[in-house]
Each structure stands twice: as C-alpha cells, then as structure tokens.
Amino acid sequence: MATVFFDTALLADGWANKVRATIIDGVFAVIETGASPADGEDRHAVAVPGLPNLHSHAFQRGMAGLAETAGPGDDSFWTWREVMYRFVDALTPDDLLAVAAMAQVEMLEGGFTRVGEFHYLHHAPDGRPYADPAAMASALAAACAETGIALTLLPVFYAHSGFGGAAPTDGQRRFVHDVDGYARLLDASAGAIAGLPDAVLGIAPHSLRAVTPEELARIVLLTAGPIHIHIAEQVREVEDCIAWSGARPVEWLLDHAAVDDRWCLVHATHMTADETARMARSGAVAGLCPITEANLGDGIFPARDFLAAGGRFGIGSDSNVLIDGCEELRLLEYGQRLAHRGRNLLAGGGSTGAALWRGALAGGGQALGAPAGIAVGAPADFLTLDTGHPSLAAREGNAILDALVFAAGRSAIDGVWRRGQRVVSGGRHIAREAIVQRYRATLARLLA
Ligand code: ZN
Image (tube, rainbow, N blue to C red; front, side, top):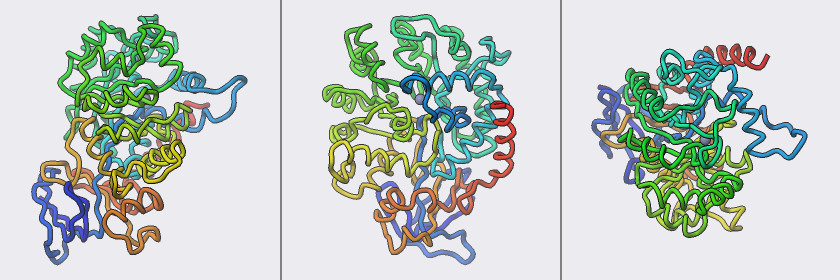
C-alpha cells in the first residue's frame, strides 16, 4: 500500500483539491478530497489521468521519417505502404522488442499509459509461422514488461489484398492466416501476455479489404474482448468497397456486423452524414489518429458532427511517426477549425482541452477494455505536471488542460506513474538510456 497527495487532480467527476490517493496492488483503492498532506508524504501539485493510446503499430516507429522524400510519381498512403513493407521484410522478434520499447518510452513520456497494439506482423521473414505462433506478440509483451506501459493486444486477422477475397501479395506474407491458424494465434497470444499485470486481449480484423464477410463473421466469435478494425481511411478504399458491395465501408459494416460498444472503428475518415449519425448511435468508439492521418494525407474525420451526435472517440499514435498525446488532441481540434473556419468546435460548450482529454480517456478506456481515470478500481496510472512551466503559470482547473493541450504540450509532463510506480521522472523514462542505445544499434543494422 502507498499513498500519494495531489494539491489538485482531475478525478472522474472533475477537478478536486487536496487529494490523497491510496494505492493497493497498483490500483486506486481510496481517493479522499479535502485532505491534509502528512509529513513526508509523496506530494505533487497537479495530477491528470494518463491517456489510452488506442491504436499503434509499434514497429513503424523504426521507419518514422523514412517516407518523407518525394518519389518518382505522386506520393500517397499506398506509396508509404510500400516503404513500410520493405521495412518489415527483415524484422526479427528481437528487433521488434527493441523498436517497440523505444516507441513505448516515448508514449509514456508523451502522456500515454496504455497502448492498444494493432499487431499484424506475425510470421518469420519468409512468411512461415514461427515455432511459437505468438513469437512477435511475446516480443511486444516483453517490451511492455520493460517499459511498464499497459497493453491491450489486438492480434490482427489479415487474409486478403483487396475486397472480394483477393489473394494476399508477397509483401503481406508475414501477416496472413486462415481462420483456424488465427484461432491458434489467439490462444498463443493469451499465453504471451499472461505475465503482464493488467493486459487485455482483443481481436482486430485488419480491414474490409483484408477479410471476407464469412471470415469476419467467424472471427468475431473468437473473443469476448474489444474488436478493432481499420475502416474508411482512404478514398480509394471507399470506391473499391462500393464497387465490390454497392455500399460504403462504414455503411457496410453497420449493416452486416453487430457493431456495439465493444467495437473500435479506426479512422472512419470518409463517412456520409448518415454513416456518421449511425456510427455515433452504435456506441462504437472512433479510433482517431490525427498525426498519422495528416502525415498520410488521409483526410479529416467529421469530429464536430460525430460528437454532436453523441459519438465516442479515442486517440491513437498509429504509425508512430511522432508520439505525443497532447499533439494528437490539438491536431484533432485544429483539423476541425481549419475545415469549418471556427474555434472550440469539440468543446461541448466548455473547455476544449478538458473535453478532449476526458473524451479520449473515456473512449480510449472503452476501446481498450480497461478502466481509465483517477478513480477507485482503476489502475494507478497518472501524470504529474510541471507547474513551473511558463504555459501553466497561474492556471487552475480546466485552464490547466487548455494550456497543456494547446500551449505547453508534452514539455509540461514531469512524472508518469503506472500502477503506482513512477516510470517517467523529469519528463524522461527511467530506462530511456539503455532502450535508446539498443534501438540505435538495431536501426543501424536494419537500415544498413
Ligand atoms: Zn493502423
């Protein structure tokens, strides 16, 4: 048992002062407000809950910045994907451990305390399964054990290169399964994460491009946990879906799958007003990745209308080209401002920073199947802020979150705790140095 004292903290029902949190076995057991600090008690000025990062492909951290040079033709998501396929060609489980740990260090430093790994790099470089079908998942779990970040593992089912069951390409050979092989992967993945204290296992049909309707119907029966899918990220994907089925991707999914609050629809960038309203009503979370969506030129999610319809959202670092919770939230709002030429469009009538932080916390927790927030029963995952940061000067309550999201960013995050253990101090992860060194050696080999 341990206690920690906050002069002010963002709790489930809003800001409270003089907060003492009692932590037992890594979980908030008691939260008192209006308390008095005891002599020598671990005391911090401002605490906010750590954010869930609901969508990551950890290995892509290693190719951050490698696809920012113009090619011979027009560059797009699809030419970026070719760079990604080349990067994964030789990656081993040890390489994945090194790259994932680096990404997770930056996630924790950037305000994320749980990651949803949309994990599709399963097989050996020649496309054959490893002796342990979850060898790559075990590498991700080992990275989490090193860095302390919480894991929701979402093993990806990937079988086809396009709508209508098209055969996979050679570049996809490390990703593909049939349904029986995928069921074995899920069993092995449960074993791979068993040593982590609060890991969650879900599933991830990759996209409607990669999964037939029959396969989708079978794999959703394999889990009682979260279900994540990439959807409607690209205009070409929408056009191909219409050519195949007569329906748009989100429309097709809502018509053919029992989409509910266990689902996370990642991107959902290209929707009609009707799809936007229907998706909001479904209770599914929109998995938004504004930095990656901007980097890949995907388009702008209809966030203003989706939230006005009661839709739930969370944020993800996706390609990990830049890992920063504050910047994801800021860009989410700024995309709407640029599109609609207005301000405070996702505020819900109050503070935009608070609406974004609390929305991403609730939606991210839902999508990752884990309680989130500074609340009894939730893991003791929280951030403490540097109140000496100029952008936080004389700020109180929601003005702190507005300043954090729009002005200071991650430079104001001082400490990060996971299950009551401090993993980031002075803005730096406690194992940063060794993890960076190993990452540099791995990249030197991979990119030689
Ligand atoms: Zn993705």
